[in-house]
Length: 345
Image (tube, rainbow, N blue to C red):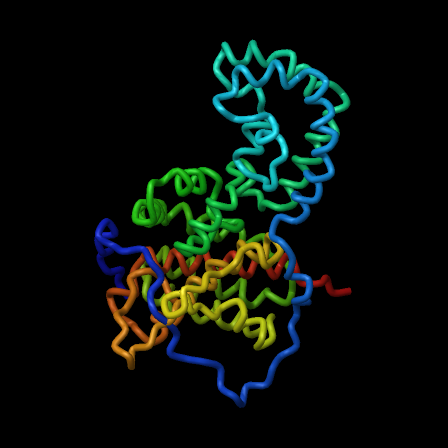
């Protein structure tokens, strides 16, 4: 199947469209979840929040011993109390705490006594612990960018851009710096070959036997995209996503993670309801399940959707960029199960 011409993404609207035309049949027997879903709940950033909360008292004591007086004159309307007790592994944390020398020369000189204090042995373990927490929270492709919760909500929940494990750090940085959703889609459209390579690299590193077959089908998506069979690639990726979810989650869990009533009820996927990896992996899955009922005359969305891929086959839905989104999404989900499923003896 020859690749068809990509539509002009500059004219695209980037809001969630309507919803699924298919629901699981009542006769479908619930499967036992391969992942213990009770482990999926809790605040997405709770480990980091707990750690930084424990450190606040220590930081405050050091500030009160004279450091604050040297910092306040050079910080632009930012109180020291606002600078230090941060609640997320964010760009703010990285720039304002871990990299206090990242100002211009004048500010750097003014902060010299403070930075010397922070580089003293008593602080080495603090920063090492923060780096360790960031390393545990973020997959390798996100550690340099350390996107904030606002960044994550905008890209994962509002736009459905998969970011877990793929794409590579340079592409992540471009996506975070892009001014809007349409610009991000253009970035993915331009860099699709590199993104396909990123997905292949992640998939080839997946070892868990429970997702071995899914890994093979996802690599078939890679081959189809490279060969120009974009429609075949998108159809396989969309159905593979559904199969992986059904195989590894029970019915209640699948519904919780995929029920997208945003357009009709205004209810968003809440990142804070889940552990970090779960929230970031399945927010784009939720987005991809936006409601779509052709029998109600719903317009076919241009953004990737699992349901319009199945029930709205058209040049509007099927495109190389949507096939790339689908591959990124299913790669992230398979990698999630590779890391979270219990090891077999």
